[in-house]
Length: 73
Image (cartoon, rainbow, N blue to C red; front, side):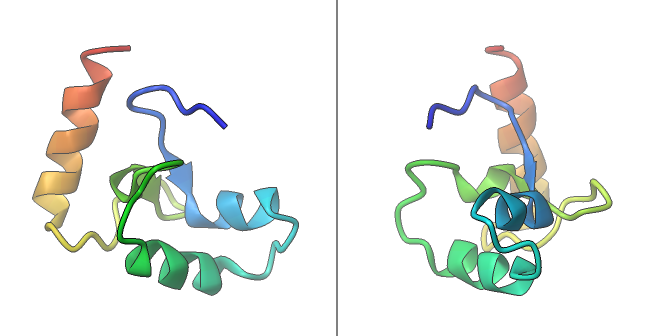
């Protein structure tokens, strides 16, 4: 599954994609535990309301990474 630079995904949307629409919290936990974000880098996952949520590097860094990638669309 190729993901273009700057594309963001809500946790709930990822849960729906895997056929488990009620597993949003499990997606959050799996994303947090992910050591190598190959398919969807963790900084591209957002809350259902569109807000940035949880990122070990800090939300300011998450925003910076998304903004940087958007320059290469």
